[in-house]
Length: 518
Image (cartoon, rainbow, N blue to C red; front, side):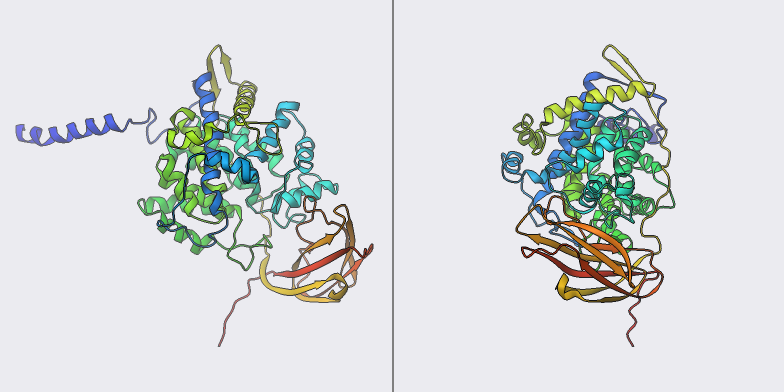
């Protein structure tokens, strides 16, 4: 017995030393969401500030790599720099980098101006008429809204070929930051606003990110946060299945994020919707980019730098993904616990409004804090002096949605012609997207063009020459009867100073095309 005791003693001593150096969470690994969670106002504000700060730092860190590594990781030997004054440099030279942040702030400002019950049309119009440039699902939604197609139809896949893209995923941070400990409340906010520009998996990206932010207020266990937040997503969705795979692969390959990245590429990197990514390495789909956020969070193990760096090195939208990962982790850690190495550059810009807004980080901190207090009280929590009592929520899955169901990209038709030269375009399948653009000496010019399929007029479209209000694709039509189709076009208001260019047509059918060469 004495010998056994002597053998055990060194292990006890080592364990005590480990605990001293690695404080254990006050919530066990088998933790559950509590009925209530209490913070001081100072702690609540610190976490909200940590979320905004983390998002801004992560966006800056990955900025120069965005979509430069498509379908490949950023190798370890590739330096990602963090020089003095780096965030201020981007503020001054390319403020459009921070679309992750100023898009969020559009919605924060509407809540601030009109209150928690602001109607969805107010968010939609603020977004559609803002001065910033947009792309993908956001731009398709802006076009729809300005043409009178309001949410949720503005984000629906039949009206928006980019509906599965990452757009709302990068804009949902505000929903979690104003819903501490309340993932279902964040989902309700995202239901209203996220359907402005997305649907299905594209919407789920924002729902999941919002839920992770909400849970980061009440847990310091990354594994717990990502697994509990996933309960907000329907199990039958592609999005859920991919995230569940990442969580499983992390357990299978706990020390090797690159192995999990490879497994994602093999199983989940197929692009279906975005006309700019189909048949190309670019993938702006929410599913794969959310997987990269998750890889960063899980393999980062609570370390701010590792989390951000891994999410960046996964590639594709490699500024938005570290922005979300660092924002979620920043919420968990709190502003006061983000290492000063990263914060020094942030301090320089906290009083500078983001471009296209009148809102600085310091103002955003306070706006989100005020909104969080209102949301807490509305959902049964209490503000008692300096104490904030949150009535926490067990995550519940939102409704199931699927875009592009039964549609498979099967080919491209290269056109490279102006509308007067296009004649008749033939294709075989169940859907088609015509890519192209309108040019004019007059930025206010709007081309009016009719599309006919098989002799029947499908649409008369307004096609602005303005890049800010453009339609990302000229025309599209899904859910066609399977077979051969003829497309023709008629320009109703030709102008000698304008042109309508057709690039290519992406063709869909009801089954994938298999390449079997004898």
